[in-house]
Image (cartoon, rainbow, N blue to C red):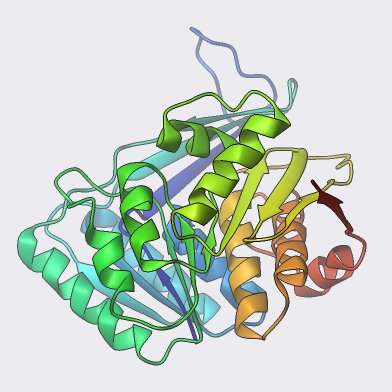
Length: 308
């Protein structure tokens, strides 16, 4: 079992436009609703990659029932923490003329003390049987920045962290197996620009020195970098001819890495599966609805380049 935990799920509206015009009335070609947000995307990616997930997330308000129905229909095991506040709604705007994606993101829903206590208890219970854990997403206002660190102290399973900022820096104390920010998130976390590859490698090594066994950094269509205690690798990405929706690619990468780690793969092979999952996600309208065979095939075509 792989635990996918996080505090920032979303009820996602995806609107597809022939051409999006700012400041005008825009009529969508298509409107789709689905469960999303990092934690839900990771759980869905794990399921489609053939892993046995357990999704742990807060959920409440009008979004509760449709997300529960969707996850039940997909056969995704889950433990929802019922909240008194409504789960946020986020909106993706897809402009087919310019091939651009605009994301409108509500802040994560604040949790009451008893809800946070219930989430901690569910996490600890599930972590005891976990082969791997993915914790992802932002923390709602009022959540202690040490929450992730404290939760990870309750498990010996390898952990993939897709978080940023003070909560990431605090979690490094418990030596997470993989830390997976994107380049912009890493820059924000360390408070400095990462304008060239040397600056990026230095930032990754800093996370390694502070406790992360492996650091994986994505940067959109540009190369993915992986650093460990004694190695730095770069994975160049293939050109993707058609991008349908890029939202959720980082979440699919985290799910792919965790799936491979749980199967005992090397970090290089885990990175390849994660990258392949992210690439496959580009072709799906709804985030994290992956094609397992296509992902596995894509992973075999990726190659790493050792770096100094």
